[in-house]
Image (cartoon, rainbow over all chains, first blue to last red; front, side, top):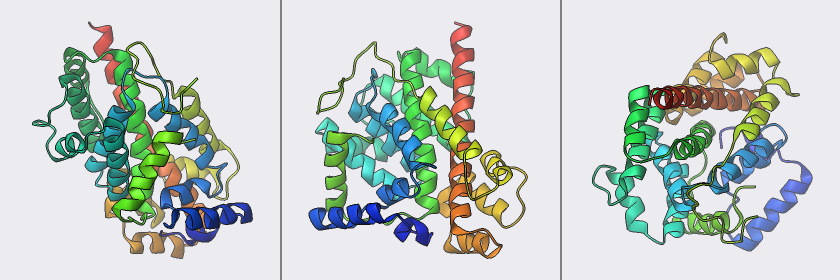
Length: 193
Length: 115
């Protein structure tokens, strides 16, 4: 973590909570958690509400689809922590690790439905080029994706284009697979609030 | 409303981040902070900051994965506290994600209006 306050500047009650988490999980407290618990009224609390709604709110996209979108957007942003964290959640939600790996390695040949593929293509362009145009949106609609589904996917994209930037700027520590497995289990059971 | 296993996909369901997004943006730009509001607004817009903060903010917006220890150290050495750098980076990240999101919503509106 590049700012010492994000590592160890939390108020006393939060430090006690972190000690408890370390003792129970036998893993370091994830940097994503440290970030949202630092002065939570400024960023963490409002962001958790937003991310929870985007990832677990009512949608025609499944939780697995949205976690896959999060991992995929993070791949475009080259954000290692978020790729690993959300691949793990998507794999668990789908019960299919091969599907997630296939999408992350080659979107065009992965065995997924065309509406999801067209949506991910649009999110890739938006994330990489910072803008999309009317033609891009027509292509997604033509693949059978509803307007509401596009809006829901854009909410996920917003959340991860924010989170990825913070993870990379503050240089989140990337733990081993066990920590991401534990994180995925927690996020599927409890969500982001 | 949600079961422990989480909601299933529902073809007519629609989530809504409008309220949460407005609250987040209002909080970071207009609420109390250690960085002056003008800095936070400039970081959000990626415009109007001076070096070395402008370089850090531009990298957060355009290629955050290339940020180095030196970028953050240079920003700190120019005067801002860690809390101020924290706030500025948050504003820069949310600002860039906002521009992307608004571009996409405008394109979606145009695409559906002409159908």
